[in-house]
Amino acid sequence: SVRSSSLCPRASGLMVCVLEIPSSASLTYIGECAFSGCTQITELTLREGITYIGRWAFEGTQISYVKIPSSVVCMDGEYGSMYGFSSFSGCMNLETVEFENGITEIPSWALAQVESLKEVILPETVTALNESVFENDKNLLTVNLPSEITTIPENTFFNCSSPFSRPKTSYNL
Image (cartoon, one colour):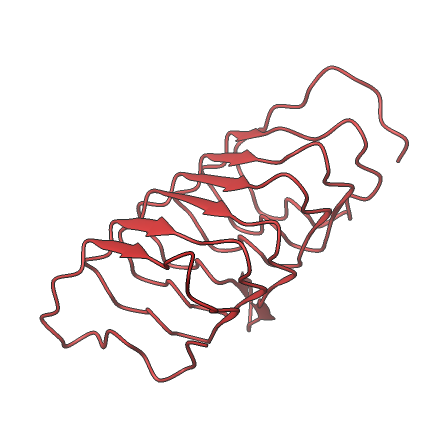
């Protein structure tokens, strides 16, 4: 378990380029601000078994792509004074997020305030997007919506200025 006491404080000169959680590790919980400010992290590999990612866990890192394992059931978000915040808020280079096959629901504010985000890849197993998942993601261009999706709240794409693509199929909404 990685808790709130940051492993990589902003002031440290720690030269971490790749953060990989070994498959042999029993890590299930990444706490609030755990890697916040670790500007040297450019790649991130999250292993199956992680169930919780705290808010601002990777804020300020330089990752450009992340794959979320299907074991993640909570990506802690919070509604602030004006907008929500997520596990990846403030990741200025994060352009693509892919969710692994098996995940069925994308948590509220999961990717809120990731202004560099351009593409989200959802597996066919996703049936629900929750509130404000993509709130204030101003550069979001592509979100593939699975054919079995049944829930998309009104504010899922709140304050996204770019259109997103949908497959040309009908939905039972």
